[in-house]
Length: 438
Ligand code: NDP
Image (cartoon, rainbow, N blue to C red; front, side, top):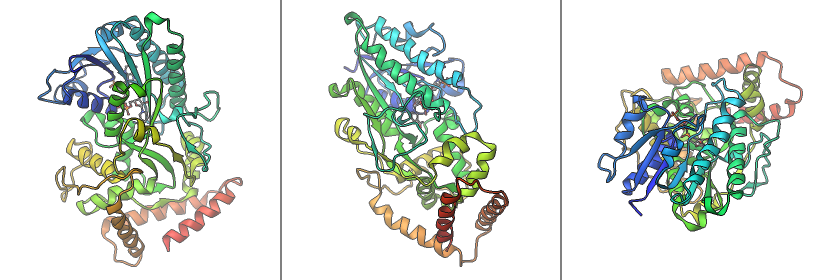
């Protein structure tokens, strides 16, 4: 098996580089596609992904918006892991549906057509879809445990461009494979990761959406976190899932949600804070009041349409197939977040504070089935108590800054009139805020 050739599309990506690393560490032959071989920032680090790999990583050029290059990329491969797809940060990027749907949907079909043309060697294709194709609507049913049977309604008016691109791409993939004549058939398996965090492998990943999100937290782009819950998974679990989906017979013809558990954004901030606060990183852990997000929504459509309706709403996601079929035990959130921040500092994506320790200094935390950290719970409680006590303590200069920021934002926001329809939720939110502040 180790001599079989596996294609990883978009191999320089945040997730794909982990996938390639695992394959190479396992002694497998890997070919990766990149959009440009002359992009040194993306290509050079790939050559050192696994310095003592049995087979060096082979690289070829291919772009999802063009057919050329894909036949050569797929030739002689037995398996394809199709992870490439544009994934912009929708809070900041100015992208249209067209920018994303073409490479995602048409690009996936280009890759699958090339696989069908090489069906004499290609046995299975794993497509990296997203949880966005399982439930991408803004409306969340708090009673429901979302699973692989669920599909985002591609016609729903409240989908953002990225979500639409992912659901259309995955649907197109299943439809395409269903219609294949016998002599062009190959198996399809799909991975649906929820929001992915965990250590990046290359400095160029600083622009990946997942890494940008963590940079914003650690760099205090916003002085507080909104009360938003979303499911999170570890990039290393996502990479393992791709390989299991390629190898395990029972993974064929199935979708697989990859999720550790659902967490409040504050949980992510606390996981970072408890490790890095003492190392000189003043991670904001206080809750952004509803009214602030509402005001931000006046200026930012993504805030208004996609963030505001989800504020304060819990969400459950089923990771049964990940655990039982793929046999992957989710990594604990603390490990995911803390390893990510260490890697980002080490790669120069985040500044190195004077008190910064070295990579690998994080205390090991054992994972549990739902990603909670047993040992860390004590730390969480301690952290919460410390926060409560903070109000009465003499504040450090950085903390004073944080408190001032939060108070200023709140004051500015309260000058604006809140919307009538948000009245009920706002007052509840304010009660909670007041309680937390006590
Ligand atoms: P990255 O942005 O790090 O990687 C995306 C990859 O896709 C890059 O290698 C990029 O190539 C490639 N790509 C983008 N457009 C094209 C194109 N037109 N032609 C060829 N390649 C292209 O994102 P992630 O690693 O986070 O995401 C990888 C996949 O996982 C995506 O399909 C994404 O939708 C999915 N996903 C990600 C989640 C997350 O939280 N990160 C959650 C759920 C799903 P280049 O380097 O040249 O730009």
